[in-house]
Amino acid sequence: MFEIQPIDAITYRQQTRRSTLIIAVLFLVLAMAFSTVAVALFGEPGGDNLRFNVGGVFGAFLLTAALLRGRFWNQTWMAPAVYGWRLKRSLMSVTNVMHQVTAAVEKDDPTAMKVLRFYHQGLTQMHELDGNSSDHGQLHREVEAHKARMEALGLDTDQTRLDPAWLETLKSR
Image (cartoon, rainbow, N blue to C red; front, side):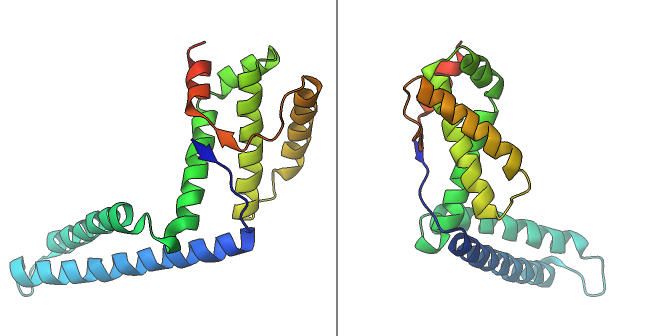
């Protein structure tokens, strides 16, 4: 279950830039070190050592990915980036069944109404966090129309959680 959290967009962008920079520097250092060691151990002086350099970079990529998911993922300095990743994954899971969601919304299905409301709130937050206001005008009209429709049906418009069971229910229809 994913829940939308209130997050300051400026702080979010600063913290995600910092964590991205840390991971990028780690990757560069590992890539240079692994490539240098690979060439020193297996290369030929003055020879073509491209495959060892590429192998070192690939090894650094694998180690960086393993460290990111295994060691860094639960660190506090990674929390904003992890939250953004989880929000985008949740929005994508809704996007993947959007045709079923919209069809069920047309029939006033309460589950679909809640899923679409979550999607609107999550998408609005993602636009704010990323500093993307280009689609905000059109989205705002759609969000307000859907919110009014939910209120008219007596449904709670505060849908900050996405229950995966809702998506499974919509997929099976």
